[in-house]
Image (tube, rainbow, N blue to C red):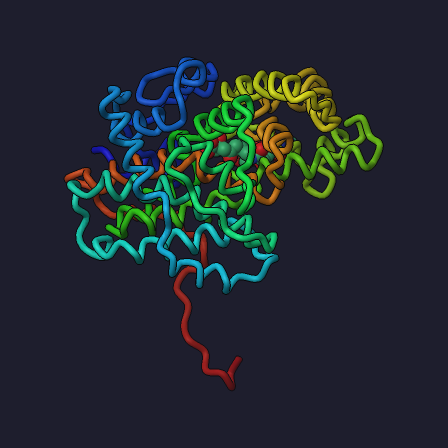
Length: 393
Ligand code: SDX
């Protein structure tokens, strides 16, 4: 049955889930959205078209594309009263904390969310969320820098508008470099869905209780935040900066990792499913070289990353554990080149992942026989005990 977790002995207590959205073959390094290989989508699709594919199960016709883009434009503004919520955050607040809170706050301006799920209203709710997550993210960034909020503009496409809201000034629009727009749009596309990862499974878990779309997505943001998951792109850059500051060519760091020195990990490497090269990492690495060359940027962190990859891929420690670069290993280099601050990297991941969360929410909400997720446990606590009064303890 779609949507419910089945208890599967071979999976131990993690269970397994059925879905029609994304296919991964970890052994072969294959990723497909609704059956279409990620390489073909990266080559030919925009993020919004891939989002449509993931959410509605098919690539949009031109009419469908125009309609959906029109909805994203129509709902790009957040309610003006939302600004009061932003005022309440300290400038030091992490943007993922703000994003999670503000997604639920934005949902409060859609009263229909408090009623039973209505499939007829799904497209409008999805368009609200997918469009406004950009606005919320950009406002959070500008607020953290003490900068005035920049309103979205109807003339801009999805990713252009996000860059505009992030980097324009009240009296001067940010100059959109097509190479930068294309690179960020690709980053969003490559993050758009990824089967039952930690944050998507969280969205499905919350959706299974019949909570609304915004509540489920807000929970997904919290799960994504962790450095072992979406927070890894920020952790990779911090790791590369540390290696550079130590005037290390990576050798010392990899020794720390191999000796599990204070739990050191090669961030951006390894994956629960991929036991081969993450196909997204391969695409991002190429885009990295292309963008930095077009922008005339020579980033020492990219050189360190490439040296780490080359060394690790030939080191028995990593080979034995089948550890390869994942989507997070090179994505931060591109975001750095664009001028996105590291604390916003995981927010970029969340914007990209939104279509996958929306599609998975819908799959659970519309599965007629969907039951609440209730993973079982293997109890390892004490057997029968009895209460001991305080004065006897
Ligand atoms: C994402 O699930 C998804 O699909 C996620 C994602 C998505 O799109 O949603 O793909 C996005 O989260 C990518 C992963 C980003 N995280 C990182 O890059 C953080 C670094 N990676 C590791 O923390 C780790 O590889 C995980 C969390 C990604 C996977 O962990 P697993 O599957 O639980 O693997 P494990 O911890 O059981 O590791 C097996 C062995 C262990 O060594 P031994 O105990 O056998 O000696 O491999 C070692 C681990 O110590 N290992 C690493 C390592 N990852 C695993 N050693 C050093 N560096 C690493 N990165």
